[in-house]
Image 1 (cartoon, rainbow over the protein chains, first blue to last red):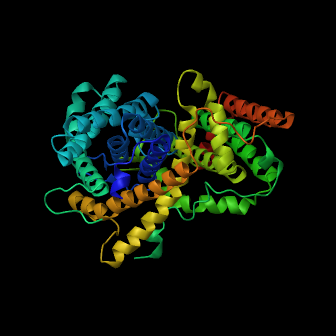
Image 2 (cartoon, chains in turn yellow, green):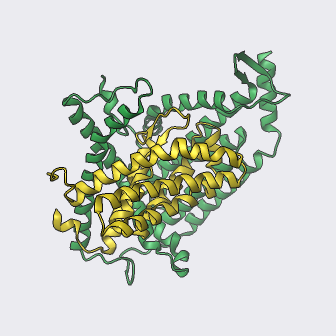
Image 3 (cartoon, rainbow over the protein chains, first blue to last red):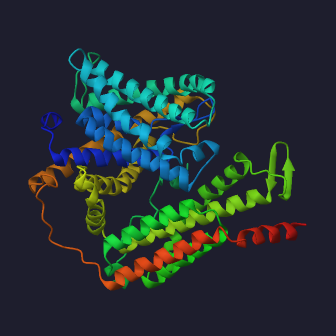
Length: 191
Length: 295
């Protein structure tokens, strides 16, 4: 497996990883496994974690493709089965699709910048940056369409964005470290 | 702990192929995809009960023409009903539909049920049914290979602008194929972890740290085993010398016949009529009838 983890990136690899991680984002959203009830009202989501993992493994193009699948699914879900007034806003592709295209790119940039220093740290940073991109851009688009006043946005960003960033960082590190069999120092992973 | 707790998507028939050899099965997949896309867009934009009923009739005719037993199609919708009911209740409560000239059925604390709420819930049910049945019809009558090639052909104009149409079509189809696999894998993992004493029961309380810690032993192996499956698929594709869309030729070339265009024209006409129905007073009459009956 260790040889596979460093295998050269081919078209087949990019397509399959993008498809599989896109499927994971859809699956997490569809089954509601990707939502965790949270005191601040809106549930925390980890649906964007597949985008971050895909971007870290296969680069920004794959990250963008997974983001597109994630965005299209959240658009479709909001249109088909709105569960509240917030879902109605997500029927606008500028809110549901466009911001998601950037998650992968930003996560990959963060990972790339710190990879040489410390890989687990770079993965955590990728998870945090990817999540914050999602939070800031989605909320920014919501503000742009005046669904909420600008002053209401920072508290939401902090109440939901920060815990989501922590969850995403934990998951990204756990999955990619195990997949690439990076030694984390604590103990060798035994896959 | 019941067995159904582990069943995620098992009973969902959406995504299966049901060969009956009907005219709809033999139709050009590009036309079927286009018709499906039109249906999704039109139904999403629709907000009239009469229009949705008309679209539903169109889908029903499609099922009859494809010779697919209606009972089978219904069995795919049945497991979604409790979820849909919950959604209906949520919508009635969470999205206030109050305006001056609507009949109030019931008022309790901050919850008010009005005729408009009833209409909104009916719309939700109809929209959901039309879309699920319409997309099921597409998947029952079209193989995965046909879907992939059809998507690719439809996206081909984008290739002129430099977008990788072939690659994106294949990505979408890998995603579609993997969703049921993920469901199976999750079931397997949940059972495995439950046999070791993990508790996936209904989330009691708001202790989100505990809920997240329950998800970790499920999500991490799920993602890892999915990546493992992805490696198998990559190996299989590379063993067959797959190198992407450039310079690729096709074994089967689609040729749309007159009957295909006739089918597309029928879909367009019915959907246009359904969209136009929202401008007619058919729904207003229905609302008034409901309100009068209530009084």
